[in-house]
Length: 330
Image 1 (cartoon, helix red, strand yellow):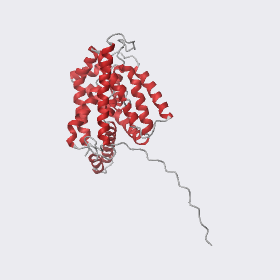
Image 2: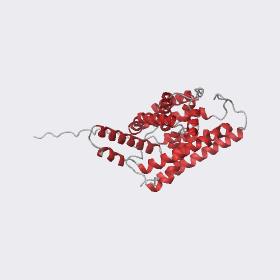
Image 3: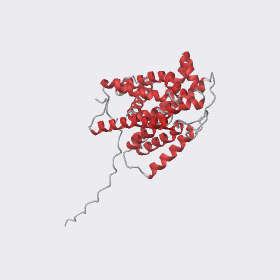
Image 4: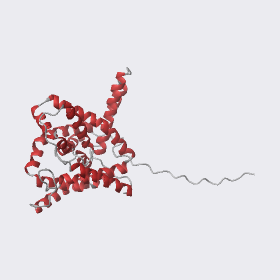
């Protein structure tokens, strides 16, 4: 006599975590001009204290792609150096280098560096001469940009996400309220290295401005002067610190984006909200917040204009995504 076995109850299978859209997709070289333009916008943001290049990278749709490409580059360089040092040859490292999304990385970095150098002489003085209207435009842009990481969440907003958002917002608000340090004409190179290592991480963290961190550390003016004077020792130390700092952080962020995307996006949104403190149009000479005093109508109009630009970019990206098109992808 056979005994019938009752069917086992179906096991619960956790839904897969949504992977970033950039995973496994390469860019076409035909999109190099557009990629350079988007990279230039990121570079322009990094030149202005209070504006985060990571925020602009999110808005123009570069964030996931840049983090993944940077992670690939770091892995390839580490593999190449380690294998050569151990006598294993360079084949594995060269193979890893070929897997990098160079059609994206090269034009984006080129546009970023060129526009950053130009903006240090153009955009930053504009902020100094016309601080209220300039900050008003950026304030409106960032307010609307907060919706970008929230839209990139793979699941519905959870109570835990709210907690992470508030904590990140408070931390960013406190950070942007730090007083600026007195600029030193000839800072020690070890301090330049450390400052660059910290500031470069703002490039990949929306809401945290690398330029603002340099201001807080008293390095903003010395960096400008070193670039104008072509001080190779200073600039070389700064670049080395930036490379080390980025290499130490980007792999962690890449893992978070792929495995803890929901909470990571909540934190990024909170950082952007907290950073609005640095962009409040009315501030005193020391960065203290003030009540609206003059040109209120103009400030509101400029803020709405900045918000409209970002909103238009978001709608354009949404339509392309809905149509199954991704700009610059092969």
